[in-house]
Amino acid sequence: MEPQEEKEAQVAAWLKKIFGDHPIPQYEVNPRTTEILYHLSERNRVRDRDVYLVTEDLKQKASEYESEAKHLQDLLMDSVNFSPANLSSIGSRYLNALVDSAVVLETKDTSLASFIPAVNDLTSNLFRTKSKNEEIKLELEKLEKNLTATLVLEKCLQEDLKKAELHLCTERAKVDHRLQNMDFLKAKSEEFRYGIKAAEEQLSARGMDASLSHQSLVALSEKLAELKRQTIPLKRKLGSYLDLMPNPSLAQVKIEEAKRELDSIEAELTKKVDMMEL
Image 1 (tube, rainbow, N blue to C red):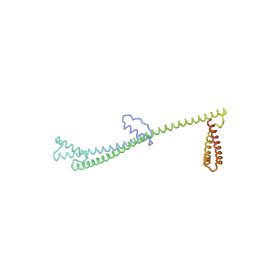
Image 2: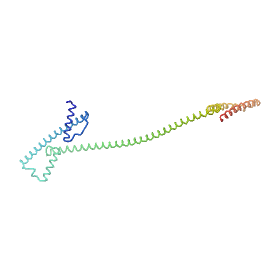
Image 3: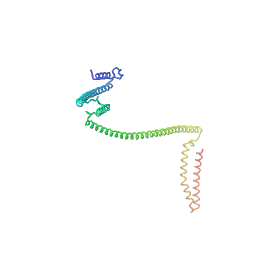
């Protein structure tokens, strides 16, 4: 028989022993469940063996105690003609209490020499237990403090997370709004561009001078600004002539020339401005 089949047979026998006349619950038979149940059966077998050994040991000790008690009873009867049956009710209670104490303290007899070490050991165990309890108490207090700090930190992190989520939602809404505005502006820009192009085509079809188009007007505006910039040194030059006094006739000629030049520039500027207004 294969090892796996042996394990399955052992598991089945163990389950039958555990449940007895009751039906065995259904379970999926596979290598993993068989292995788990096999280990459980082995541990149960070891535990049963240990319990059996302890039980047998206790039975042997009980038999020895009974023999010792019978021997002591016979000794009392032979030496002082004393029997527990002859004790009063109070004496019987004291004797039972003494026996119970010996059993609890696990002494070999009820002598004072056996009771004192047992009581000392019990007292030492009590102090050790109290010390251990104090250590456990301090450790629990420390754990409670750490748990409180952890809970506070968790609460703060949850609040920060909520704030971050709220901020993220707000920023997302702003971005969505900006994207919508951008799409709207792009659509309007395309609409205006097509509108301008259609208007220029209509005006061109009606015989409008090409110099009055948007691009031409922009160019004229730039040229006008350039001409105004060019008139600044001429005005300065004219001012310098006006300040000269040595030869009135020559100065008058220069002034007249400068005025004519300035009038010509101003006339050209006026013409350009009128064209732009049209």
